[in-house]
Image 1 (cartoon, protein in one colour):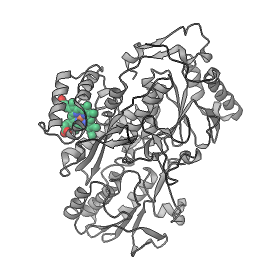
Image 2 (cartoon, chains in turn purple, red):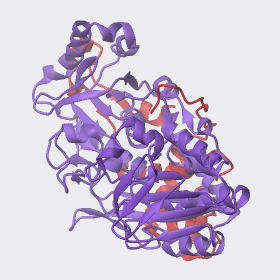
Image 3 (tube, rainbow over the protein chains, first blue to last red):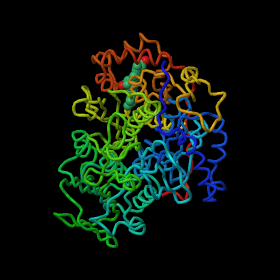
Image 4 (cartoon, each protein chain N blue to C red):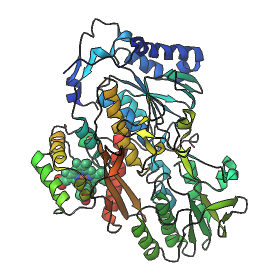
Length: 439
Length: 126
């Protein structure tokens, strides 16, 4: 074992960063009274640290990175997560709320165990600015310095072509429900009040978007509810893509066999205009009227990634080094999860896999050591086609040193057909990933 | 849940004499683990739990007998063992990775994993 070199050129920065934070906290006046962080800090001060990592976003990616940095550094790296929501609501399984077999309260959790079990420090606040040059994050109620920053904000929605859908009132009528939460609950309520014979119209943006099979799973969930309770109702799917983007063969078969006469799938249909009051959608081909309207807007990297100016790919996604997830644009800032530009599915499992590669790399980099030069990880996306049966797409991804990308390894693929057994395994997946990410 | 092995291999040099806030990075040295295998193993956690401590009836990999692990994985890889999903994961791995994963998981201490408690969605959430 060799003695590692100091990873910072200015040794004082490490110690100072905490003092600065406390000072700022004091100046802001609010941190001390409203954040338990300070007492956490005091406790932590008893322990030596090799620096501070600030994580923006406590979703699958951010929470995982936070936990694994603590674990793999044997608690010697201070980790502070900034999250604007006080609860974790799982997007995976949230389509089952629309189908009626799950409640949103089955998918909602707290962050207490991550803090208690791993000493992750938690700030419930919203980021307003990122000062890349001075390694500083500003929030509504304070600011904090970092040695390394992880940005894991998930996706944000683009309303350039559909500006009237941006307001909260508009989304009350036409929720996207593509972040799990009250919009999911709202959409379920609307489905419950739809008359037998009414139509649910949903739109899918062009790839890439969060959770490739998610929209098709949603169509199945709503259709399974209609089949049981409102058999004359229809699910009209307006897909901006030329064909089903994930598990195509499987979904095509399920649409045709399980939901014939209910799901009406229309590819190559880009939403151009929405009359919200009258629930009428105009695409480049047709005009469709709905009883319940679910427009899933196009997406891009979450706001904090844009604040740091990291969205260099199509102005939407962030280019990273796949060995460390460090941004190609800003040193010491890492981006993980849905905001990353990659030919990788934007899934929860993927977000956690990226988070662990990033966590491992940061633990090494902060000791001036070399990260794993050839990361390999797994991804699985399960989709439920009704309340019991599910099917998977699963792949192992390997680093391609020549192209510097993650590439699908041999043996990946999809289920032969949906099954109840896989429905049980999909449920077990959720229980295990929640346990891994949140405890 | 802190990995005991890691904690014991976490070595502090001359830290006692140093003021806490100004401790230098060079005074903390973590042992270099097999990074490649540790990260790969951790990507199994989505179904097999943290460090292989699975819930919900999925196979617990923590503390699993090496030979059993290798036999199962090779059988998944070669298509000899029926599986819903494991053949996809096993086929993507190299045999030497499977051997090292067997080593890694057999060294993990089996513990009772826990689930976070489900909560009522609060009004102030999105």
